[in-house]
Amino acid sequence: MLSPQTEEPILTEEIIEEELEPTDLEEAVDNVERAVPAIEFRDVYLAFDDKIILDGVSFTVRRGETKVILGRSGGGKSTTIRLILGLLKPDAGQILIDGEDITDYSEVEMMEVRKKIGMVFQEGALFDSLSVYDNVAYRLHEQRVDEEEVEKEVRRMLKFVDLEDAIDKMPAELSGGMRRRVGIARALVGDPQIVMFDEPTAGLDPPTARTICELAIKLRDLEDVSSIFVTHEMKNVEYLSSEHATVNEEGEVVFEMEGEELCLINTEIIMLREGKIIFSGKDEELLASKNPYIQKFMRGK
Ligand SMILES: Nc1ncnc2c1ncn2[C@@H]1O[C@H](COP(=O)(O)OP(=O)(O)OP(=O)(O)O)[C@@H](O)[C@H]1O
Ligand SMILES: [Mg+2]
Image (cartoon, rainbow, N blue to C red):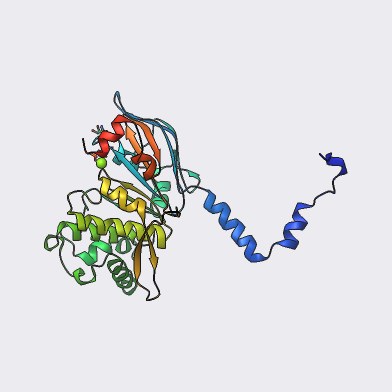
């Protein structure tokens, strides 16, 4: 091995200036940014009175990744989402969004953070007295955006969820699946880079549930969105873990199955039980798990 003294001195800065084209530099900066998780929980604890909900939970959601959260009812899934939105504060531990520690952020500071997060609520949560247009436009109207801009954006979002024809309808005129899709369109206004889905398919028939999964896959693969997808339906896990979206030569979005040798699906799963993460990994690992609790959960018991 060469001793340090015998080596040529390396002038790092000069080398970078000489060898890296501006585009390389941009790429390098981009890569550093990509390395910062979109969401990170570091040893998070939360209890309501003496009931422990999260008991030292740590996980990350990378850029462009979908993290599926599985767990029984009352297992702390929606609570996890409320912590990310800063609607609740942990008793201990840290929560980071895009590398920013938001744990002790004030309500005013959280309002800035929430602007980059889209939220799809457990029940769709539309305003019944407002039309589809006004529901989707809600945030933009709040921000007093010019109406011409608002209309363009609302139409773009409704196109994404394939509901352009419903623009003038009232929520009461829509089916459950359509309401859920309007909820998704509303969450996507402003192109948030983080989207949280809280049981977006609960109570929907299988084909409609699949449509919702396809929307999540499109966001993941075509928009590089990082998301949390709370569910207890294994079919959703299967779709999100085995298909990916691309655009074909005709410009249409198509869904392809994961190839045998390819592993490009950016979805991982965590399972919560009694406040702890008892599983973290890919769907194949989940399916192969020998843990009796996990096996029972997957069989719907
Ligand atoms: N503000 C609160 N005060 C007291 N207890 C709460 C509060 N919010 C949630 N809980 C309790 O925390 C636990 C976790 O609730 P959470 O809503 O996170 O469950 P979940 O995993 O989303 O369940 P589900 O699948 O039914 O939606 C539940 O026992 C709930 O009763
Ligand atoms: Mg919940």
